[in-house]
Image 1 (spheres, rainbow, N blue to C red):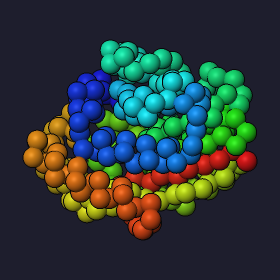
Image 2: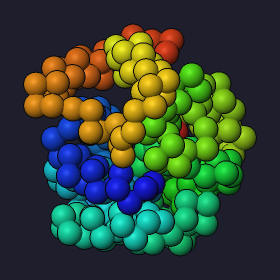
Image 3: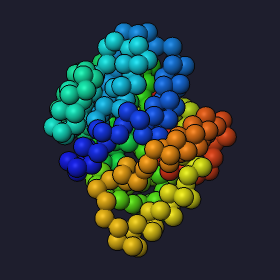
Length: 243
């Protein structure tokens, strides 16, 4: 991700509607797993620490992060969010069967070899360990944030599930989310692209009032998506188990 995009994210992730409600969704799903507070957890692709903040707030004591970017590692350190190791998702610097839970939220779309990344995630999971994986969905939604984040692709559900099955991981709960805002986001990204509007990050497209409105909308979205299983969304989530 671009350095300027990291700086913007670091400033807003604690309060921005997308980060806040996404943490709420992940937190509910992790809480239902019944993991002990000392379960060993890895967050791959920490960025500026949004998932580490969530894990700390959930009361976990044995979590750590990994990111390729020195900018990301510095931001996490500045926020006091725990240990973050420099490394590559396609060559994780951890022993086999090390972790009870791995978070890989919006990370495998960054690498050329997404199957290799999934193989590495499987390798470091303990027997019966779990991974929470999210990816950006639908190529038609490609926009500024994909560019500044250096994404390689966006996924349909089938494409991601085929890759998960290929590395002998078992896909459990799965659904698209951020479906309420699918059409508005598509429209905004189309206008930004056609009008040539220059921004350093889509996270700049926000005000205090908009943040409150979108937070309520997104809260309703992530509260219903796991049960309604909408056929589309800006993102796709799947919980996987090591077979």
